[in-house]
Image (cartoon, rainbow, N blue to C red; front, side, top):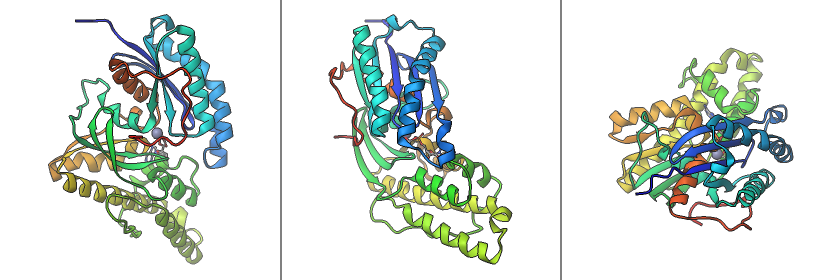
Length: 342
Ligand code: KG4
Ligand code: ZN
């Protein structure tokens, strides 16, 4: 038996977080994330600024990840990086850096699909976390995606349903913008919703076939609702912000849980995992945890720090691919549109 430890350096730069992590086999030794504050004043991610900030951040972030893990770069077994999907200018920074470093150190390069990583994050070793067995269902909910995925094996996945327009994270962020809250609004809606009445304002749920989602209509109905209420009472939002947030979050969670339930009924699979930035939402975490006794599901909720974009999730996929010797060519290029299973 080979007891040699595999050390993976992982790099994530698909959107507006620059992150590097070091894993020893399936254990995370360090996971450094540099958030880019610059986008706040624009109310959303500005791709060109994201790319520039990645360029500034990547060297110090990688340094810090290696230092925190107490690992010399010469001890690394391979470099894993996010190849896509994401913003091209952002992906290019991580991809070029990973390629150069793997060439310099003469170690394998491993490309990772960001959406697969949001799912396989559940295989990071942690005594306090359960690990799903195959097959299981995964709902990936982030700022760019909303998917229900049938996970047959580590790298064998099938998309059963997805959003036809906005992603659920966008629904949170765009709703927050309508309420005058700064970007990213998802965490703020979550915080304010805790103090509000979720049934104060019933927003309509879209009717979408199968396991697909739609979130663009919700934003419009919130806009009209606020306009109408503000006309009658100019202080409506200030006076009712917590109830409005709770009602928006409740509607979004209802939409997600309904589709998840449909997916369970259709497939007969009761192991349900979530991943992606919106999996950090306290409401969805509670709803999923409650489904264990309410619906008899086995549910898997990532640790908070592994929900939003991070390199540790890229590292675990890197490790799993390393075991299969599933390496990338040195001339691999970033892929802005990169669908699971393609
Ligand atoms: O996975 P992620 O970090 O980046 C993408 O791959 O898109 O997800 C970011 C998204 C943002 O839309 C953000 O508002 C949302 O996740 N988000 C939340 C919460 N924390 C992050 N949405 C609702 N509640 C939260 N607590
Ligand atoms: Zn993500």
